[in-house]
View 1: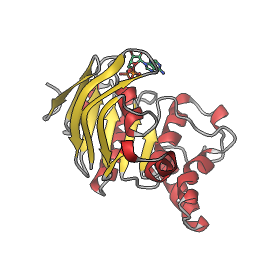
View 2: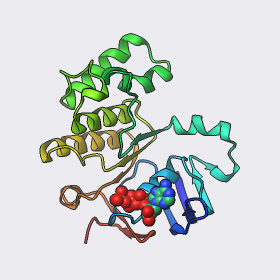
View 3: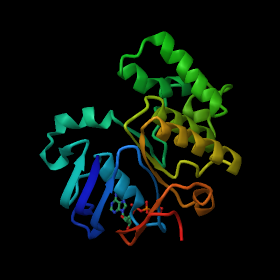
Length: 223
Ligand SMILES: Nc1ncnc2c1ncn2[C@@H]1O[C@H](COP(=O)(O)OP(=O)(O)OP(=O)(O)O)[C@@H](O)[C@H]1O
């Protein structure tokens, strides 16, 4: 489903920050992505979200060589991907419920279903009392949970998450991880970047590790 062959990436004329990445993410697989700060985790997620082009190599996503895609083809492909950005990227003038409803409204889901579905999910992540709050009055952990709810609500084919539990306590972190596990059970392919090795160790999923922009694959979790 997703295949990288000798992929490199640089920002503008700068040095390469990712080198010779070759890996496959099979449909329905679930990997953690770990590595020290600056190793290139967010950069790899940017490639996968088609927010940045590789400087060399071949990336195949959902059967498309992305080098052959026109700019106009990207939105349709991105709609198959849910993303939790490190800095959340919520829409400031929309409430929590409106932010999370957005992917369903874009997909044309009937309004009655949108409302009940979004309320249920936000309540599940502990935000039942914050449905009508705007991002400016939410804490970091609350914003993070809205961002996660928005990313998972449309049951995307691929979910990318950058440090999705970085702002919540350990109990909520586990709850959010189980949300990802459930999403994976219904077929979503997951790649979750996290520094939190103690959390990663609690799950069986394999771990991909980046070091200085180069990938080391651990099939059986952390060493
Ligand atoms: N917009 C940018 N322009 C130029 N260089 C960048 C940019 N973003 C990241 N880099 C560089 O790319 C390298 C990888 O950064 P990246 O943010 O992908 O690492 P990371 O593993 O996600 O780090 P962290 O865990 O701290 O978020 C670093 O050397 C960083 O300085």
